[in-house]
Length: 116
Length: 239
Image 1 (spheres, each protein chain N blue to C red):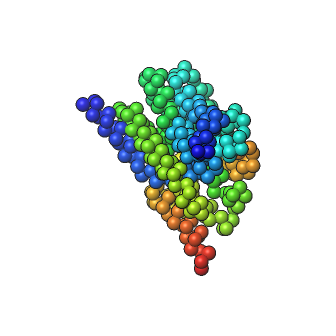
Image 2: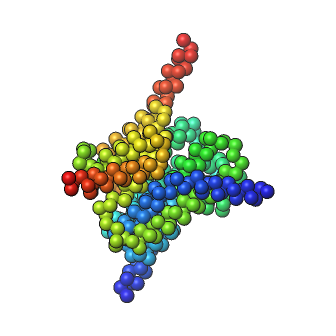
């Protein structure tokens, strides 16, 4: 029964609505405004480079930290697996190969190496 | 005739997303698990996933919700993590201006990182493809379905998948596969490198603002390198 009461906590519901509102605000406002908003050329140029920069920032922040601690050395198995992923993709251009190869590398380092 | 070719385009959009689906699936699974592990009930996590459809924003907002942070802070955090979608939609906007406002609202809502990259490469390869909207809708809906199914599996499997499997790494590896082909030119490579370094250095900032700092610095570096290269090629042409 307490579970049921937990699920009608108004704070959590308002928080869910807040995150949902954030989704609509960031994704739909420019589409809905349509051609009425025009960006200056510098902004247009900046937008071209933004996806690469955003992905690089997310990937780096994901790989460089273990439980919130900066870890840029061989003990960071995620980082090694990520670098292996970059190499695999550069050679094969295969997305599934990158994900599969990277995960296998991670599991080998993480589970198999300590047993040696 | 046109009806069936639109349907073909939607199916093609969905089909061309499939090679990326292991990454989407892994991310959804991880997000589902993480929501429950950080304290949301199964019902709340399901509703959050179905309504917000925003993996990284959900993950960023979770610690705040768990500590009963102010609602404005939860919403602002989600907006900041989602800012990249303002960039994506600014780029895609010209392709959708002929549609009704309601349709555009909906097309914006279903955009995802991976579908955005797929759709951009279609626009580069076939700029005059006649059924862009159908292709986009088919791919984005496939993205939505894969995400929600995996997220729900994650929510209900939260108690059985051990965190030591490191499944979130599969999501990161999918992003790696999207990132590498974007860095083929010098300005983008320089910008991405700068973004990565700054995001790591500024990681301790609250609200995951370090990501935003990385993006801003990265774009500035890319623009500078782009400008330098243009200046050099134009001066070579003069001499």
